[in-house]
Amino acid sequence: MNSSLKKNEIGQLHLQTILKVEDSSRIVRMTLVFLVFACIVLFIGWWNSLNISWLESRIKMHEYQLYWYKNIVNDKAPNNLSTKETILFQECKDYYNSKHYTKAILIAELGGLNEAKLNNTIFIKIPIFNVTFDVNDLGLIGGFGITIIYFLLLYSLINRYNQLDNVFHLIKKLGNKIEKESAYYMLSMDQILTLPRKGIIHYKVIRLIPRFLYFIPILVLLAIFINDIITFDIGYYYLNSLGKVMAIYAASLVFLFLSITQAIWCLIIVIKTNDLWEKNYPKKQFPNE
Image 1 (cartoon, rainbow, N blue to C red):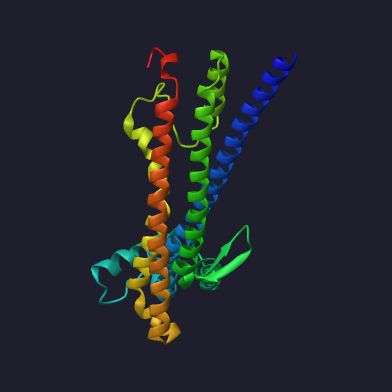
Image 2: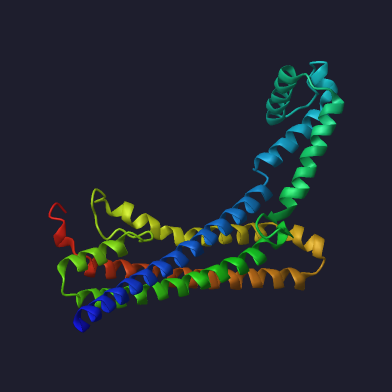
């Protein structure tokens, strides 16, 4: 009776240990979701701030339509137009012929577009936290946020690796083969961007793609920092202080460096976790691989 009770207690202990690994995987998954969410917000803010964005293109088109309104209505092109302006004038005329808008409607639409630019481009809102900040602080605030999330992700990945390593050692001590297989299956059901079992996916490139996910925020932060350098004159015009501009650039660069460092460490832990799966997962159970 005591021996049977002891075995049941050990079985429950093994089950609780595996469930704890699932909890650590859930934390990693949630942190990755926050990282992707922050990356998307930063990318949208950066993209909308560029002159090639759709919103900026719509505003410019409406401004040209308003400037050439009389010529468009009278179907008479202005004098001395360049080749590019001639093409643009034809596009404005085609749009007018399809819509037949009035000058009042054009002014109202242009006002609405500028208001949308002010509320959604110049001032960026974070939906969940209900926070608004200026687009010029995108590199500084975004870099700080990404750095914090990378910090949380790094420690979550390290904790998950340690727990997996402990569980694999624990599973090897199980005497029952069925219990071992069940334990491996339970762990593999909660993997995150890991494919220890090849199955139908034999292509190495597909198995390596998830690793690039950890560096996508770095690319966004780098694009924001480059854009800040290019638009240095605008920042200096509004702040009217070289020291303030350089301080913001320096802080953004520090956060970029910290994010790169942590992303590399995250990748190292991910590679080690993959190696841990490759080393311990019982591939002999799958003869077709």
